[in-house]
Amino acid sequence: MRDEKGILFILSGPSGVGKGTVRKALFDQDPDLAYSISVTTRDPREGEEDGVDYFFKTKEDVQQMIERNELIEYAEYVGNYYGTPKAYVEQTLEQGRDVFLEIEVQGALQVKENFPEGVFIFLFPPSLEELKNRIITRGTEDEGVVRNRLSEAKKEIEMMDAYDYVVVNDDVHAAVRRIESIVESEHLKRERIASQYKKALGSVDL
Ligand SMILES: Nc1ncnc2c1ncn2[C@@H]1O[C@H](COP(=O)(O)OP(=O)(O)OP(=O)(O)O)[C@@H](O)[C@H]1O
Ligand SMILES: Nc1nc2c(ncn2[C@@H]2O[C@H](COP(=O)(O)O)[C@@H](O)[C@H]2O)c(=O)[nH]1
Image 1 (cartoon, rainbow, N blue to C red):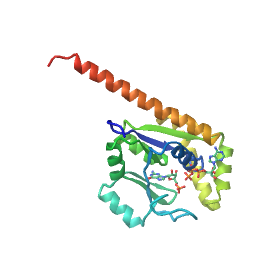
Image 2: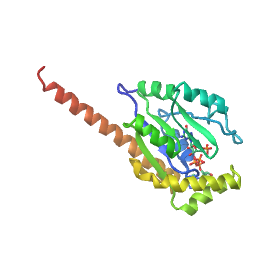
Image 3: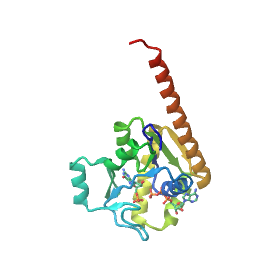
Image 4: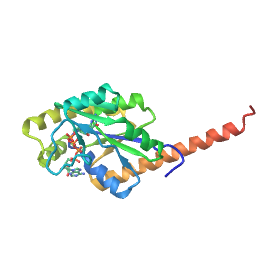
């Protein structure tokens, strides 16, 4: 654990680009990273576990969390609510651990307003054809939902410029290596700023 606060990383990008796949491979490499489990009103997919993949909630539960200001951000995405619980993120960052959010674009833009010091990474598909192919091949959504998710994807890609980094997910391991480099360089950047700040304070007579 570090003395300083951890860094908040926001991994975002269109449905089916591979956010979950890349994040899981990244976490296999670095078990010190912390994943913020979201709440959602969507039904669990086969094999998904409550408290592991998501906290599966009713619409009323999520509305209450919103009213009690318990979410950092939330969005209605293709007919369901998704949101990031605040307490876990704040406590884990305080403990000095880096936290990853894996969220869609409307939510990422809200996080940017409240956590401008966060690091925003947009995962990009090698092509739109490949994006479509991945979401269809995953086989978890019916045709109508796939169509709606792809239509959201076009709008999400238009917001790519709001992010600090764009990482192409052509190959999972290559994408993981790119994200690891971002994590490392963000730590170096913050350490350098902190040491310059301490040096400057040391040279000031108060
Ligand atoms: N680099 C890759 N090359 C080929 N297939 C990939 C790659 N990355 C992910 N996939 C596949 O693409 C599909 C979608 O991946 P995944 O579920 O991780 O996407 P996601 O962005 O988390 O989607 P969603 O936002 O809908 O939850 C999966 O079947 C996954 O195995
Ligand atoms: N704004 C938020 N988006 C989230 C959150 N958790 C997940 N997501 C994103 O929603 C879509 C759909 O997810 P799926 O599991 O139904 O495929 C995808 O882009 C997720 O990344 C969240 O807390 N807030």
